[in-house]
Length: 313
Ligand code: NAD
Ligand code: UDP
Image 1 (cartoon, rainbow, N blue to C red):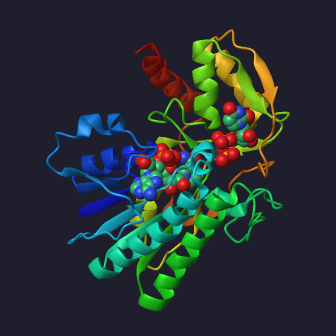
Image 2 (cartoon, rainbow, N blue to C red):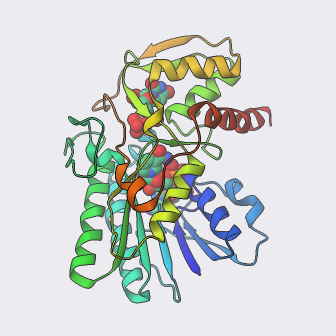
């Protein structure tokens, strides 16, 4: 198949491109390299079935013969999506319109990398797909949260109005190799600090929870979702409900696994930071036969090994 991956040079996108090439597809990676890095794709560049197109997803996409589109283009770390919030919402809304128009012209299936952030600071725990969420529409996180919600709306309207074949996947906190050292998300921040002997900064008291999914499991879910029965549009939660931890527990585990002498310090809690998050994955289990296979311990070990190499270089 000929497959387009927008945001393919980023953390999850680079793993997805690698996996799709391994399965003998032709892969086009479209990226503006805002948070992506060509280093994530270095080993793929000599593959003749792989093409990298430097383009912004907010510009119309002119391509032919595309069978599948994975739309991942969007900065995912709060630090990066709040850097230029107007650009973030443009990326989500214009990006969705552009990939949906492309899917419509090519009669391709298009998958949206949505997010658990559509649930905001959830009043229901764990979160099922039926929950409509608790999102501040005017806060500092809304450029991302509302952008992703608007993108879901566009996906379902293109589906109802034009019959475009859609898949919507709600990704819960995912981590692993190929995150940037300056990504700003919690797993990479804690690991890099632990490995370099710097203080590990917990925002707030560290009692907020997240459920961490290893990138290999996330990509497996994505591929199963894309290739699921055409009548199944989602939204579907993909995340690891068995690894819900507080940020304090996460810091302690990373210190233990790295044998670090770093101290834990406390900083200010960012505005609208969700207090807890855990996916209900019954739908993914039932329809996709998917559940996470990697424990937090094993995933953290892989990620620490990756960053240990980067930090050394
Ligand atoms: P990432 O920041 O590493 O990757 C995003 C990629 O998109 C980067 O390569 C970046 O350069 C590219 N990009 C950003 N804006 C663009 C634009 N306007 N045009 C073209 N390319 C653009 O993030 P990630 O963790 O790999 O996330 C990938 C997708 O998954 C994102 O859509 C994100 O919202 C979603 N997601 C990720 C997580 C997670 O925990 N990692 C959770 C929920 C949702
Ligand atoms: N966090 C933290 N220290 C950091 C980075 C993040 O304590 O160096 C906290 C953050 O406030 C949030 C949690 O870790 O409560 C997860 O943050 P991240 O940005 O990784 O993801 P998100 O909040 O988008 O789920």
